[in-house]
Length: 195
Image 1 (cartoon, rainbow, N blue to C red):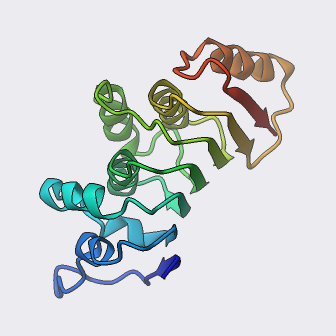
Image 2: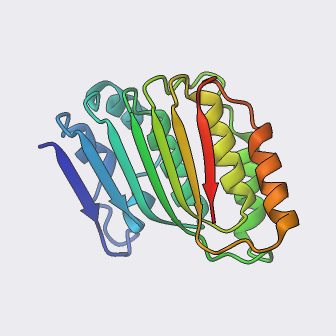
């Protein structure tokens, strides 16, 4: 099996905990490309022992597509756990569906989690391209970009796409400056953002 697409409807997993996504993935070592949609990322769960198993078994996985990631702490945490445990990942595509407001109670939790992340020991040395779509000025996207740039030794290109047009020239300038100031592990990495 080279391509696996998992799209699961939202379900009440307090009633039935029969789905163990990490176990399923660790039993599919020949997967080359993986697409996880929305709620599927939620049930992945950061089980450390299972993620170590994934690291040793999913060596063929080159492309990861996280589609329709919501502004939920569990989805963001699980997505990052999966990314950091894929040793040969070459292409990452993330499609965000962030509809949060500044008053969203998840904001402080997500911001605190991302700021506290320690990825000093993470080396995504095979990652070549990253594409993130659906950005609407969220600080957590800035943190995600920073983490990936600082961990990817072979990165060639990172493309960031806004889901809405940024019309204010000062805001455009601010975003551009922030992106240019992010430290990169790969000296040849090209960073682009489009609105």
